[in-house]
Image 1: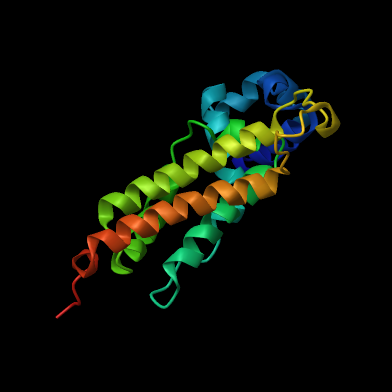
Image 2: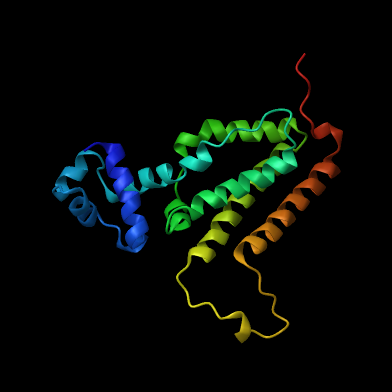
Amino acid sequence: MNRETVVTEALDLLDDVGLETVSTRRLAKRLGVEQPSLYYHFRTKKDLLAAMAQAAMAPHADAPLPSAEDDWRAWFLENSRSFRRTLLMRRDGARLHAGSTPTGDLDRIRHKMAFLVSSGVPEREAQMAMLAAGRYTVGCVLEEQADTDSPDADDLPDDVPVLDPETAFEAGLALILSGLEQHTAASGPASAAPSPS
């Protein structure tokens, strides 16, 4: 048993029972070991959850980084869509991710920010838009994965729009992008990063 095996089994347990029911006792039983042996790899349950969150984000974290010739608008949309798809891959994926710190992802985040700034997006607006899009995506997936008894569309008044989760997500994401485009246009050419000399 190694650290990777523990995390893989913990994520499978998450899919089976949900985040509320994941425990080191259940995980040890699943692995066929005594509970204290897990502490060799993870000192606390919090450490285990952090490793699970990082592993669960691998499909998004391994996605290609933007290159200079990419359109920043199309990339911004796809980056958020990739994040959403990844959160949805795991039961309670958004809850697992919420509050986690992307310590292993800092170089990628810096690259993404540098790409937006070099594409003409003001740095402050790029930071705020990435933060807003990330939190918006987590919120949307939290709602989507919530175990609630949502009212049936037939039970709602006629003037209440009913959107499927993906359509609703895309509508809000388009509004975030629209706001970022407006701020970028208002800042003018001066916002573009200077060419290297």
